[in-house]
Length: 400
Figure 1 (cartoon, rainbow, N blue to C red):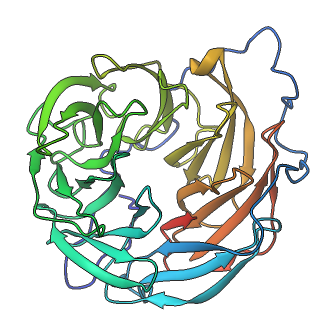
Figure 2: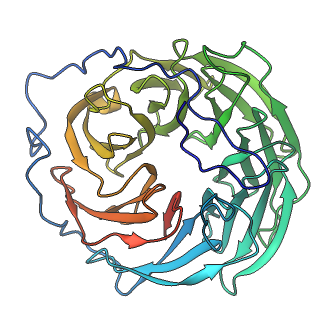
Figure 3: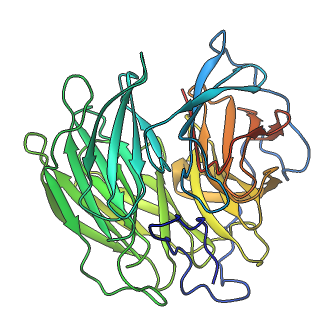
């Protein structure tokens, strides 16, 4: 039995890979178009140049989520650093302590407040004012092991997913960015858990690009739930369900900027899928499983990111320890696998693009590093930006 998380000393251990079978997962090859898009390479083996687009001048902040109570020594808290937008070089500047096991991070749309999950048995979310790094408040998520959070585009609601108890929560945010008492808590009681799963495991809670619906990805039930969020009361009403194939173990969903398609990383069966999305109804339709580029070894895909122009998508592969590169075609309806690039670390738990899209950051849990790549905007090529940045139990990198 494998796991992507170090045991949490004295508390509990989150199992992620129950039901994974040895050997290669069955996949369907991604269809190839008659001709590749202009500038798209045939493979990812040749390094591309650093992008020439305009970048912000001077260092930019980087925050790194960690496990503070991991066996063998964890992080000190939320690691504080800065990065050079031109070179990708990271410089550390200490840690923000006082937030236990801050394994996933998000920022308010106004850029003033940082949010972290407290991934413990008594799960919580914490808000930090970035101007002076003061903790504004901590609120219970009503569940165990929250592993993901996001802020609604309105800036009024904080969404979180409790992996351990298979539930999703909503907290209101006041004018300062501080969270209030929960306005919603929904536990996924059906359908029954998928093969090898002991119960529901909510892994992500995110807003659709149109802002009209919020979607919860549940690994344990092989289901993506669509909810309507009441903009005044913060309550949730389920409107649709999308079922992945049994045992897929969906983990993370990332939308194409066009808003009509999304890409789903399936952790357990080592596949990805293109999904169609209807903004009017909130209904998601999951397509056929496709290759992660892992070649059939032990691999657990973690997360997609998509370039702002919608031309390329990148996937973090834990186990294969690579970044899969895809050309996005047909207006977002199709992914074409271009190849993989070594991530330069062990177990890339999460990836993120810099705001200008010129850099890609990978948080590598087992090696305790953050690796950085230049992203070529024309070809989607990835080129290493240099030596990894050391950060114990790095599980989330958030560049601002």
